[in-house]
Length: 96
Image (cartoon, rainbow, N blue to C red; front, side, top):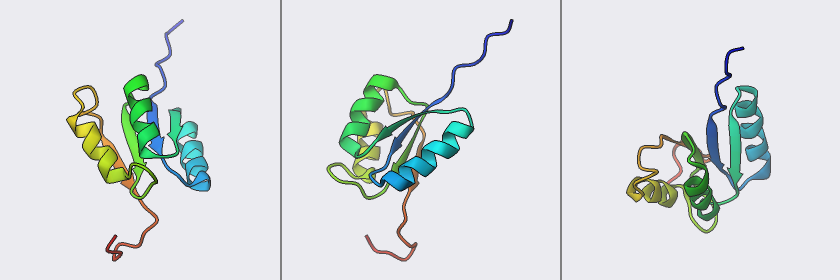
């Protein structure tokens, strides 16, 4: 019997529960193992523990925002090569 590949671990940093549930459902349907963090500080701790293959992060979150989380990934030797996808509900012309 062939060995099935391990599911890809996706770290989802999102403070909005509804948005996190939607992302988790879609990624889960694609066979991903989704690890959810409600803010960037928790996401960074989980990343160091779980070694995700990709980070999907909200731009604006409490404690540590998406940009700061991205910068923390890029200076961490074990996380610097993890691809990062930013998401936001802000309109493109928003200055924040």
